Image 1 (cartoon, rainbow, N blue to C red):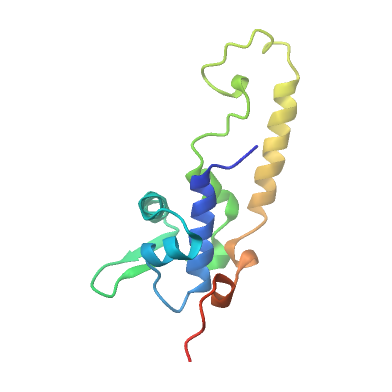
Image 2: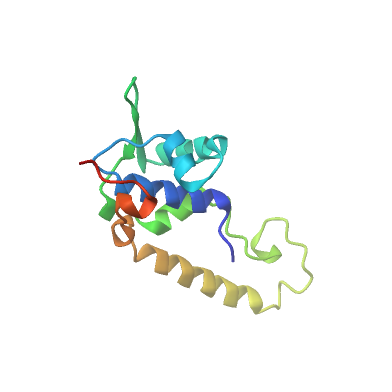
Length: 142
């Protein structure tokens, strides 16, 4: 299984916001730090804001901040909010045309694996992954 870039970027944005809890972050700064397209990050940030993980502060000196404390942001919740689906194989989707589905045992095994993957993500919060601003190449204010 592979997470989409969208989920990867969402987790990175949250990590950056958590490291900068004392400062509002901007999409431009985040894009520069990670070397990611600003346009793509706009979509990610919009989804994170709609999902309640980020809060947008408007105005001339506005930006983004975490909408809740890092220990309240579960990685599983973020992945569920940013992944389009979890159809690991054709038989997980509504368009399934596999002829062996009624007798196949692979679906059960993959379902169990997906449940284990999500259970692991549920055990961790953003707080478990906290980094310092220096880890992003940002020097602390003197």
